[in-house]
Length: 264
Image (cartoon, rainbow, N blue to C red):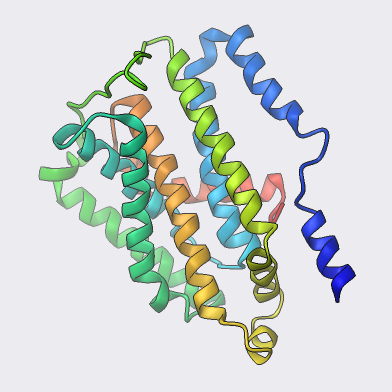
């Protein structure tokens, strides 16, 4: 068993070609400054896709409600900036924590399901929350969206300009840090156990693995990262529209995961 386990762990170690992605992102900053707003959105969706891949690709959690946590993070960050504080990093962390708390409350119940029932339940929860957001216009802004907030200069020094230089580097920094942390998660014994659950849930239960607990932990981590991605969208655009809670967000993330390679 040791050689097999070693090969799984080795598969997630950093390849020598991987720095090319980060170099390319920095080249966009210097060579295409007029496209930084679009590039920032791409990085945010890449972060959301990473969170989705942890759930669906590594843990085998077949959910169509992952965009819910993206939306919760976006609205949480917007409301924090509007009514509490405007510091970006702590605001994003708080928004991720709120998304994780919602996932921790739902996870022990919905993750007892699998396959089509899990897909339908998560989809139903997502649709219900979308409608709640639409009706609760007094807090979400409804169809008009949540506006009227602005972020304080990043680290007290870097202002959020219309050209997007600070926004791009801010999001790229988050993507780099969370990519590394998720990489450590999937390369750990916990990550290997998740992949075992994905491949054969019943067998993992027979060998005594705490399947539900592992799934809930993975679900909470993925929700936290999705919430941070939503928070970054809210902070960099100074606007939160109802669309962040729509099914389209989940489908966009799913397409990115499939095209990029599920579980990679």
